[in-house]
Length: 227
Image (cartoon, rainbow, N blue to C red; front, side, top):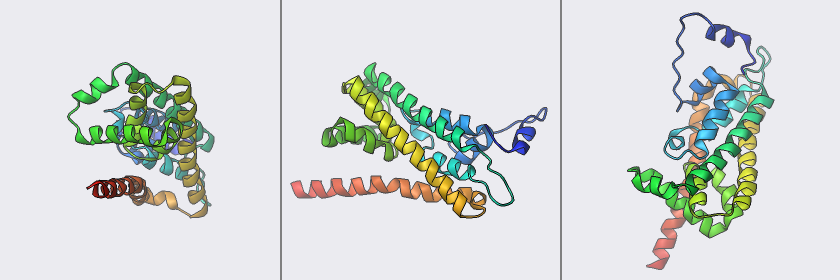
């Protein structure tokens, strides 16, 4: 899926071993390109314990940057491939997450010892109750950690399958395409931005955590108001 010829040639050298860290977006993109985007976003969108630790925002945005060419170098990834793989991974992963929730999501969450996973599941359930199914499924896509457990929680709570499919598709397509295109636009505007992927990923991590911080602040205020 890589557009550049050089990485593909290097990958085919006999005896060469490529070490891939699935939690590192730069490693995934360098090794697998758009197919890596599809697989990781699929897992991050609904495979609970597995997807909980995988990159989402921090994979899509850098992937968009790598789709932008520069004066002295063409694009390393094809934009249409990344957009397609991101959308398919997000929607298919969300649907599988829903099925997992239907067939034992609560039991799986009950067995896990991860406090972060249980806390994210509680926030996902609160989101569905607070905003309703449609709005929660769209908003939840943009909240790190919550989006991984939101779809299994929706399945466990018995959200109607047609409602879930419609709104999780809307949310998945909006989230994936917006982040890729944002990275592509910035990469096209700023020369050699792809040379600074690691600092860029750090910035995306900070920005993606803002919804969680705002939500935590709102929760503390509500708890104080009840006292």
